[in-house]
Length: 113
Image 1 (cartoon, rainbow, N blue to C red):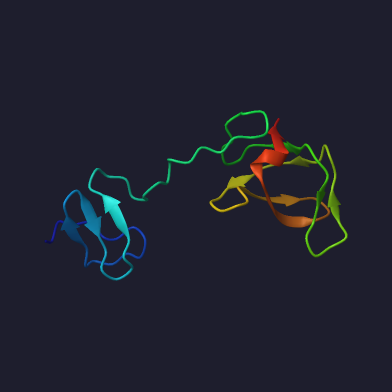
Image 2: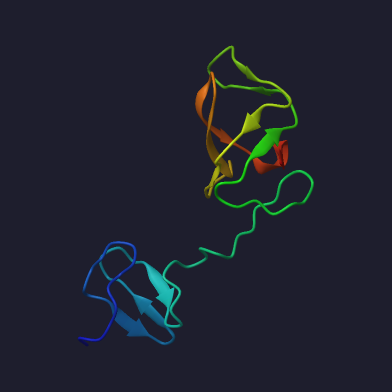
């Protein structure tokens, strides 16, 4: 049991094997024995409005006026956003926009530069 890996989610030492999976009893995280540390970490491919694959650090342009919730601000068409970060959830992109600040954008409203 000393050679079992620690849980990648919480760092617990109390992991155990079950079939082809490792399981953490403290946080209930499961991951395959094959070496992948995060289940589904690389499975999701995020594409822009034109079908180009996006990656962390890319620069994109907004293709539609977007209202900012809870504010009277609008992100205008053609606004360039540099150094995006891809995240999970209903909004795929975390970024900072000049004059507005931190934002979450959907990939369907941007195109890669």
